[in-house]
Length: 203
Image (cartoon, rainbow, N blue to C red; front, side, top):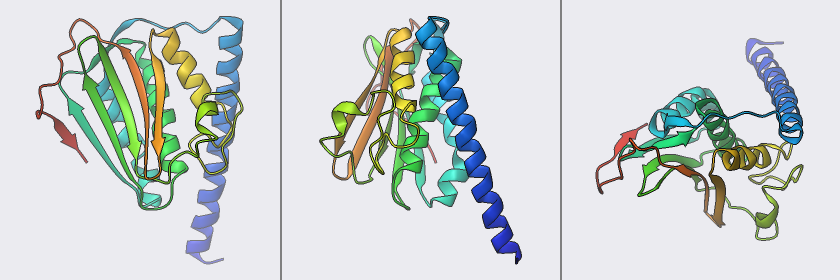
């Protein structure tokens, strides 16, 4: 085999290992949630820093998929939550946007502070979620073929349950050409509402 073919095989194997590892983690989290053994903190979490962190973590995947990923931070979006779990939710949202959209999709992570809440949303210009799938994307084990909830069918369900444990939620808005999945949490006292058009943009 030539070098290019070997690298392709290695990459395929790595992706399969990553999928199995994620499935194992999802199943463990599901077990903890059902048993009431999942603990979350309620402390200030900088959603802008979360957005920048996950964008950097997924830069290699974005490059392979020829996706563009931008980060916009508006105001001082500091949420009240558990930093590790907020990162977990953010990774799930970005992974879905990158993995289940066509090559060349544009993805935007926007962290925003509002009056009493802070949000982190992932927007993509992919085909969108079919209307018949949209009501079910947060159901456990639900899989929309090729859509935002494909994969194990656990990621978004766990993401919403974690958000609810932190006093927030995860929302979906979708139409052809635009899907937004948004983590919404209560704002920490240090959160500063966005003053349009002030924003920081990272590419």
